[in-house]
Image (cartoon, rainbow, N blue to C red; front, top):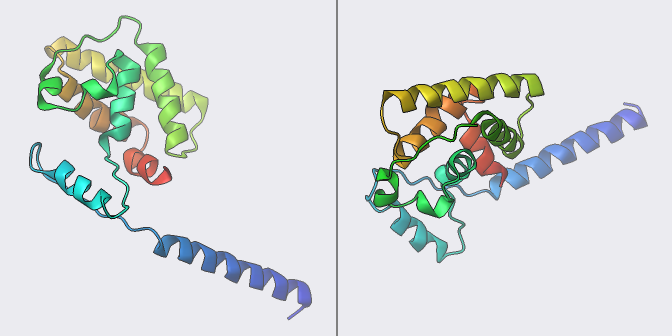
Length: 165
C-alpha cells in the first residue's frame, strides 16, 4: 500500500471512530403517552440527572406561532389547545418563512422552488381545514405536525430538527 493510500485509510478509520464515539455519547429516552398522562413529570424527573428535555412539539409550536402569531407559551395547556384561532388573511408568506425555518432546522436540502411548492400545498391544507370548521390551537398543532410538514416537507422533519439541536 502506498503512503498516500495508507494516510487516506487511516483518516477514514479515524473519522469512523469519531462518528461512532459521538453516537455512543447520545442517550435518547423517548416518553410517549396521551395528554395529561405524565410525560412532562417524567421528563422533569430525568432533567434532575442532567438530561435535557425536548419534545417533538417544540418546533411545531414555533411554526404555529409563525403562521398565526400565537406565542408558543399559549399552545401548551389543554385550555390553550381548545382556543379557536383564525388564520391570517395573508398566510402565504408566513408559511414560506416557516418552511424555510424548518428546512434549516432539519438540515434538509430543498430547493427554493420545492419550498414554495410545499408552502402552497400547506396553505391549501390549512385553508381547507379552516373552511370545514373552526380551527383550535390543538387541531392546528396536529395539522402542522402531520398533514402539512411531514407530508409536504419530509416525513422525519420533526425528528431531524430535534436531533440537530
